[in-house]
Length: 208
Image (cartoon, rainbow, N blue to C red):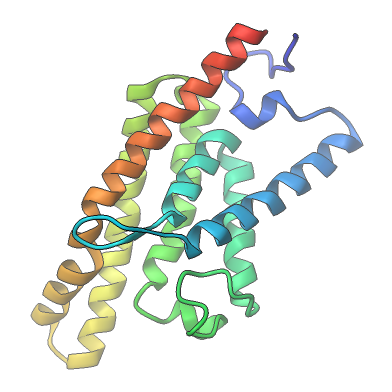
């Protein structure tokens, strides 16, 4: 079995399956739509965990970034956010909350925008061949996830500050409810993606 390549051997996983010509454009569109659907479904799945249940939303974003590469992953995440922006119920809390521009102004707005960072950073690592290596991919995802969590924390802290008028309590509240309970879950997601994507590369190599 022969797999398409970009000539450097460093293409992202999805690149090995995309055809050439017009069919490639169709394939890209289908991958983007499939990616937005996967993220939306993952956002609705809550897994029992300690200290709080976790959704699979960031897991899906990490996996898509590692498999798609930077450009396709960013396009997918932006398309997903655009779906929520126009009112489609693709986010974790929609319903009962209504999607739309106002949702991005809520406490989770920073985390949502941070998904673009995950898509770009992890996707860029995949473009450079890091998705074939467990430690390199894990490091890239960890860096991207820390940036995303920092963005989410800053936004959440600002939101809490506007709610109570005090900066200190706002930051403490954001850390206690927006970051700390999810650290273990995020580390588990990083480990799963860092193990799974290189494993797929290994399977492809054995079949080639």
